[in-house]
Amino acid sequence: MIGDCMSDTLDLKLVDKRTAERYLREGQIDQKTYERFLKTLPDVAEKSEPVTTSMAEDEEEPEAGGEESPTP
Image 1 (cartoon, rainbow, N blue to C red):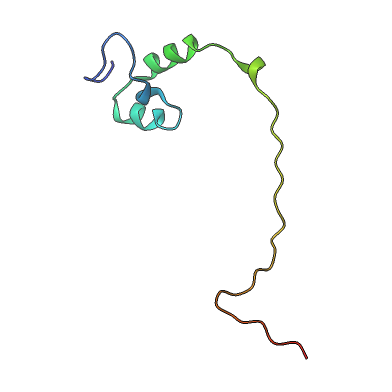
Image 2: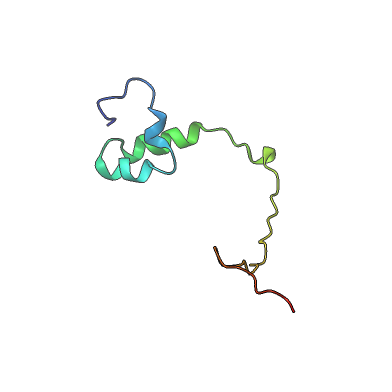
């Protein structure tokens, strides 16, 4: 069963990975329809690229509005 706003095709907002669980729980889309939709998606794993990240070390920043002490 698909929600009222649906026709032959699924509304992509209902099957977005970030929101699908909520719509499944609310009954706006059923599990069988969702699984059938997932099977139609192409496998694009070969198009992926590795990503490397690095975290900058926390640097101590001067306090806002503070003045530096004069050096002798």
